[in-house]
Every structure is written in C-alpha cells, then in structure tokens.
Image (cartoon, rainbow, N blue to C red; front, side, top):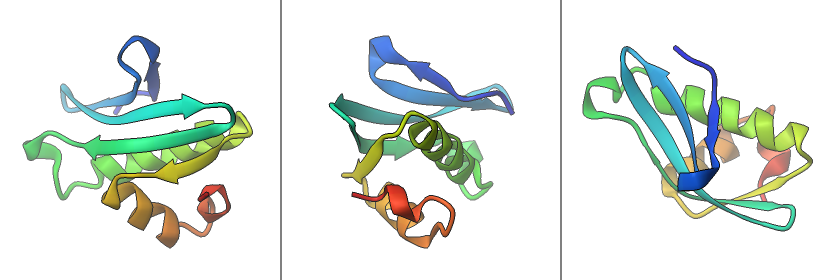
Length: 90
C-alpha cells in the first residue's frame, strides 16, 4: 500500500495497492471538498482498499480544515459510519 496522493491535475485522490490504483474524484470549492466518485479496481474490491483510501482522504481534509460533501453514495455511507471523521460530513 502506498501513501495518499492528491493528483490535482486530475482532481482526484489516489492510493496504490498491489500495483493497482484506487481513486476518489473530487471538487474543491472554498473550504468544502465534494467527493463525486470513489472506485477501486475489481481485484481490490472487498479488500478494504476503498475504505483505506477514504480514511486517508478524510485525514487529509481534517488536517486542511475542510468539510466533506459526499456526492458518491459509498463516500456518504463511509463518512456516516466513521466515528473519527463523521464531523467532517457537511
């Protein structure tokens, strides 16, 4: 597993595992981070890769003082379940 990358040119967070990349497309408007879509490659699905990406993304948002507005259903559900990052949900 690699560290979280903020690929600003593509407006997405990325994280590599097992030679594959999971990502979360986003839009940043002011102090609000909109998460439009979260996806992991098929071989990583069910392994927790998307959850690890969300945890790293949420930690980055918290450190930057951002609130998160999830458009993606997965991101919304993950944030609602997270005791540590639920307060970022906007």
